[in-house]
Image (spheres, protein in one colour):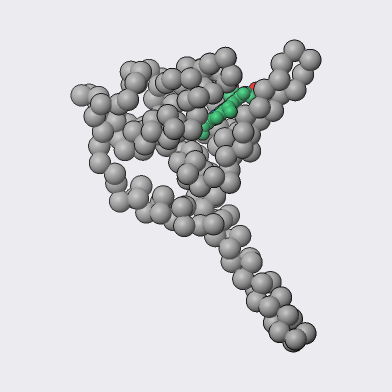
Length: 163
Ligand code: HEC
């Protein structure tokens, strides 16, 4: 009996670091991109990452940050914010959240770092908003998009499978 629980404990101690290592590796992977960028061709075709960023933004951020990243009464404009926010800071705030609690203003930005459906796409959201911020793409759903690249697929699969 005791032997069995010691064995279980040992297994847990040996295995746990493997999982957290995978999680750290995935996070590092996304965070390590120091400056992901969008690309838009002359005819207005956006790269897949930018297009996907539009989709994820529209599913998870739009209700507080407004259509096209332009801000609402709840959340600030992210197209403005990105004029001088680095990817590193964007990644950190989106992962860890942000809170202002002063006499004049209360605001809560939720932390999304534990939600794989957002965590794994922070770079996509960033490049989409950056393209909006630079006025490289118009408001609304990008009409033309390049297909997914293998590199994009592999990166997302790795991130989504890391628990
Ligand atoms: C429930 C509402 C809500 C949702 C959903 C939300 N945000 Fe926020 N966000 C806020 C608020 C409120 C602030 C301002 C926080 C403050 O000033 O302390 C904020 C601030 C931010 C900032 C910092 C802006 C700045 O100027 O410093 C970033 C970046 C950001 N949000 C990104 C995102 C992204 C990306 C998503 C979607 C994945 C998202 N937010 C979803 C409410 C939200």
